[in-house]
Image 1 (cartoon, helix red, strand yellow):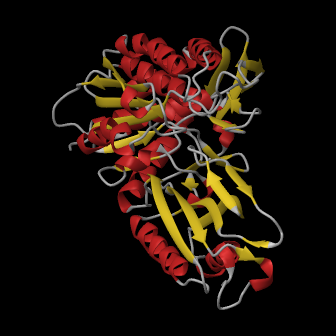
Image 2 (cartoon, one colour):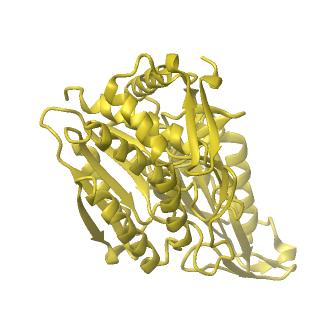
Length: 439
């Protein structure tokens, strides 16, 4: 159907509103029409909340700021009948998570809603304030992920207004460290993983994906894995390089391995990168693994070299396969050298599954009934890793129910405010319909 059946428009009193012709909503129930109207009527409130959340800095390492955002959201969920818990996590070096639970009726599908409180912008960033220009708004976390949380709440308020929330079994987990997961990861994500095992469906409220202005559904996310490669050689005068006595040196060994990665690893859905490198008479990584101090001379064969990078995969099987290939490449040493590679798996993959595709099909039924175009399936290469991947092994899921925008993780992060009511209406209808299905 044409997008003209549902048009975003500016409104002097509310800031934003949506209008639609009657035929577009002919397939909606009375409760669903109430949800649509409730979202439209609540836009001023939604935008006020978005501005307040964005103006409170919640960089991952600003533990007090993340806690303050959670405190701002607690009454929003409590007003909807949720039982709210703040789960502090000082053991991981992070603030903690906000967990809200709505019991609903027995026998209905249990929904898990996922978002995050933190942003990549710490208090020392010059990018700190919400700025609006018509239906565009700039600010730290305005799309990633404070806009998504506002969409989530707008949808839940619409369900409450229509009477469909009271029977819905919903658990919300808003993590405080999505942008930089605390360690150990098993502890940092224990609450989310447990919620995933209780759920039948997981809905991720990170930003909506688009392609040339068209909304796209996302049913997969790739993993995020880091690696550290260390090589060693014999320190000697450079005149002896490549001899039987001296060998090839640590830097040539490092170069061999990285070039073999480049030529031997490529396969569909895999990306890999080298982000940091150094070598010489000395080469030492800092504690965070983001800086390397190296020193050497042109006439000394380097005994030490180090590199760090990442690789991203679509399935657990691909992760294991790529790790094995990388280890085999590392083990084929040049003369007089040695090497070691260590891996850190930060985020598991969320593979595209039949269950995830079925959820997208259900969302497209909602789109049809709202008079919106059907959403195609996003190429997983177009999205980064996210928290929903931690529950992907236990439940079906959809990604990208939050606000549309651009420039995430940059000082030009911008939200398309006209997408907020559209996304909230989609989410409200989808959650209502899913919650009424038997487990």
